[in-house]
Image 1: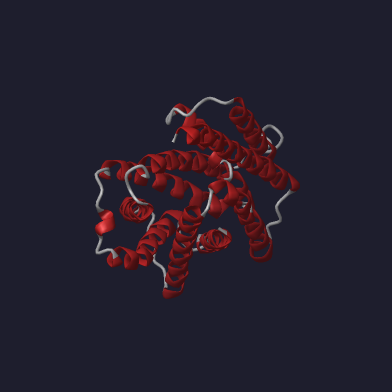
Image 2: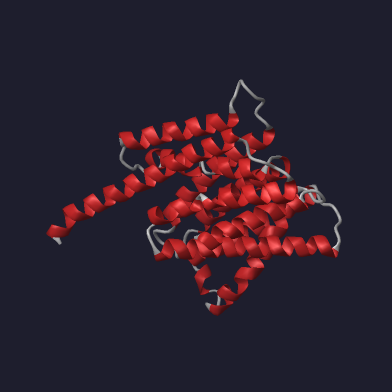
Length: 284
């Protein structure tokens, strides 16, 4: 999990760096192409058997939603401080909690809604509507977080029948396909040095995704969530060192409130599952 936070932070910084010479849509296309290229050895090892699925339509829908979130997020990285973008991205679990009730039919619990409320309080602290102008980047990353939450609901549904590698593989395939047209729309020529940077974006993106997937396989997500906050630390350091972006106190406080709200939701879900298991176990 720690490795994934480092890889995500480096990838975000590289996206910010390359966005000075290329449009975010074009960067997203190459991130997907090279990301899929780094997954090919795993697909070839299984002789592409992992691509067998009966839910291709749901995979495609997840790809459409994911590409929308990625394009919004990459655009936000190109125009807003990366620490602020990272801080607002922590709101994804808050949106996921809402969708889990509305879409997945999970039980309504008052602690969940209290945590959601405080999560949105954290977003207000960062955005400070009415006190400062809400920039386009902040709106884009908030929208991206909401779309990621929808994608996570679809992943939950897909994971009932498909393996994590199958889900990741189809994500790479559909994101690559769906990002072609937006990239062609804004296409600009570039040199070999820029191409090298985009190869690194794909590499670190794949490292981040595979590390995250493996960490979720190894242990309970609740135990991993505190480490996810490391992303803000790395991006704050990178932003200050390479882009002279110092996160303000409102970003740090708001990020902490959002993150703790998501952590509390995950903790309570874990406690509920344990209690349910304890009630069922004597009947086994």
